[in-house]
Length: 431
Image (cartoon, rainbow, N blue to C red; front, side, top):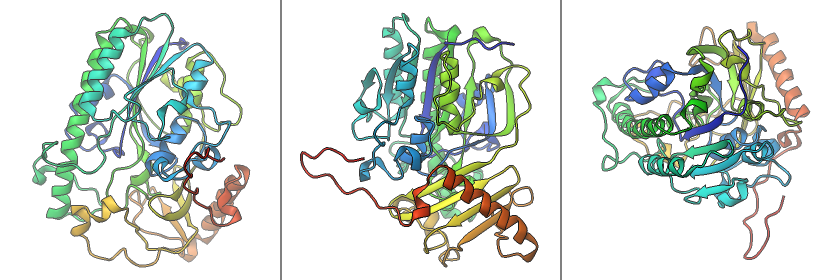
């Protein structure tokens, strides 16, 4: 089937979810609406963010560039900005006649008006899921359909904290505990509260889908659901393990395409969103983007995916912690550029119930290199970087990673990356 072009596009993104959904093999997670969306969608089982924290990860979704290329190597509220000349996804879509709008959360700039949208609702800070869903319904009611639209919908959930006054926890005895976390009462209580936030986010997604499906645009609207990065638990968010960078990615083609639901196991990246959406708009991928369009994978007979290597990065979170990684289908190689604890905890993780239930077994110094054989060790629990029988593989992965970093002019190869200076009153931001 030849995929038609120029559908309306609704991109829904949430916070700190990873793949914690029932449609990704976690049956205890209360996500029935996303389960139904998955049943109507092309589901990508091996989708990855470029970074394990909010601003850098989102920067790749909305530019098709790695954080060190677009400038957002740290959090927007810490003074990081896009470099001058970086084109955002709404700007790319505008060039092909799309009207773009933001409803709800963004985390790329303190001023959402700088991001290239034709309209911003809530100034980028209207973020709680159920309120966002109401605003989407009103937006669709007011859309005139004279031009195709690109609607970005952002939600706060499921970012910590998860107060029980806002979210109804599940039964701690029923939750799934991944192998990288201690299975104890502290962790289970923490996960049960996380489930409450996911449930509310899922309810909002269900409401948004009903609004889309009952609108005049239902037959020609493509819906994408994803998240920024992994869940806010130790050894997940803010790390380059898969638990920190693997993400949900569901793409529901328009009804007029008559595409059968499917699942794809080949690796895809958030870098692929920009070239994919530009292709759907009838354009060609802007020069300099490394992502691959996944539009061919939305066909009923998709091509066999080519082998791929993904580069992952972290530079700043609440501290300087430069890490780079290279992931293939079978191997993950991680290089830690500065000394530090093996598991540095951001403040929200340090104060979590899960952290209170952990010993200090991960408090030792982090190794300079890490190597994981993913087929045998999918949770990346056994670092074999010093194993004599894997030295050839370690050296090869190291060379390949460095080649990617040099090719993309990653500043980490030149020494310490400096944080931006806080701007003075009345000063314009610098590049």
